[in-house]
Image 1 (tube, rainbow, N blue to C red):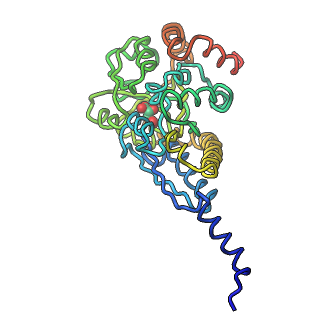
Image 2 (cartoon, rainbow, N blue to C red; image 1 turned 90 degrees about the vertical axis):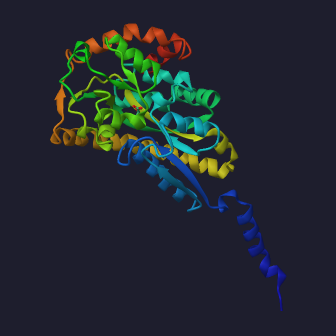
Image 3 (cartoon, helix red, strand yellow; image 1 turned 135 degrees about the horizontal axis):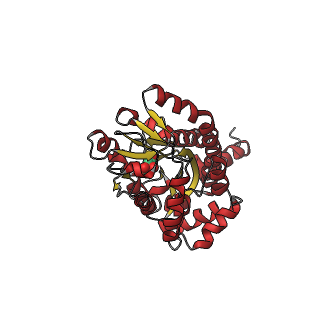
Length: 331
Ligand code: MLT
């Protein structure tokens, strides 16, 4: 005979599963500006693995490296309007939409990977996350720690800012970085990241700056020869999610997303420590020539801290924001 009672727990379990928002399989899209093999990919793919694990395979993330889904700045825009779920971009490409994150690209504010971690994972970082939701419609949920941006060019060793004279340097469309080169005496050429390899290859521009791991992932060693580690900006690359997409998720999915991105961030920090020197050695083995900046970075630093910082106090929310960050860093 048919025993209705025996079926009850099963019915309850099935309806729970249907009601549970995690029950539905979901594939998210994630844009990456860099080629596979760099710090963006390392963060993104770790996040995808962890999210899958935490949702028992209910959520997958497809990665689209190499700016396939548009320039980094386009992907911030697309996420803001809900056309894209996730993107990993350099922080300098978020600044035009959320000026207060310019704090993180103020030259020589961050002077080590530990300092980068301290600022992004503490109170300062939390404030920037909130400002970016408000100003740009995207939520920063994790960070790739990519190392200091180093200067490369195809023409000659560069020691001092004076050596830049006559070189055409590509910069992102980022006011603080443009002003930095102007303080060093040249007028740089703003160009989207996705066009930079070709720009260097065709000699439209002679040089650029980005971290060692990024230079390696993008095969810039094929079109650049000289490297100077001017350490002016520590490259931070946030993992962003469209705020509207985030708000559409169930609390369980939101939790899983936040937990996965936190762990992926930790992974990114460790990856940098384990990899950066090895990659630098590989670039040397491929024929890149390393030049030390004159007087440590002193000359480079003095020029930008006096000329660039004051110009951007207003856009980052006031001088007190920079002072607060420097205080956190014990300076
Ligand atoms: C840029 O130079 O536009 C970016 O820092 C590149 C990147 O995202 O790796």
